[in-house]
Length: 344
Image 1 (cartoon, rainbow, N blue to C red):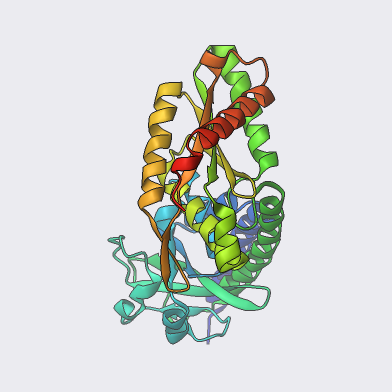
Image 2: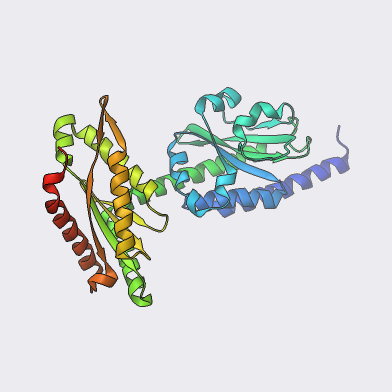
């Protein structure tokens, strides 16, 4: 039985923990984007509770993991603190329940939950499952060099409460991010849509005019794409578009703005890029795409593309829509010029 002083100390300790958890919850409740939600949660837990290792494990293939990966490019923390694992590995370790697990023995058995590139010295850890719309999609993890920090005899009630609040926040953010993607991204290729591209192009056009910088725009479309749809069907055509979109994402730079304009047309906005450099870049992309095999119904095809380029410094264009129109016109002229040379 606890002495009065021990009971008093326990009450004070729980009150302090409760205030700290409330502080973390307050910080995350109003956030509506993945990057800030995850970064704030991980940082606040580490700072408030002096925990050296705090990270998230997500099940591969979930909507949340796919959306979150898009936020990695602008974050230094997330690539180190978000770990992906398979559903079979996850459920093999934790099952499908939502009760937090405290571990201080055989930590190596849980290595699938720990970032593979980390060299953390973990002797105890807590694993609190997080869910989205009733489905467990991962867990919030904390680790310490002390074996006693997360011993199984500790009460995980606060961990369960935080995981629940985080799951609620995750549901809100996921819904918000999906709406944002629908507003600004093409649903098939997940590239920016025409509306988002025109807004970005306007901003880049104004910046280039104001600071007398280079700016080029490239229009690109797929040669004889209608023949793919006619021969293999529209599902096959969609696959070609998705494969080309992924390839374009690989071949373009982080500073470039890539969008699906309409149908089989794509637009690249190329800041700080002369007409000559844009030409070289598009020729390389043209060659890479032509060499890239696309498999449809067991058959392999190679998708050829045509492009047109307009440059602000050369065209001396007064508006960004005019620059875009000049690139489209250059595409049309190139396509007509090489029409007879295109493979069937």
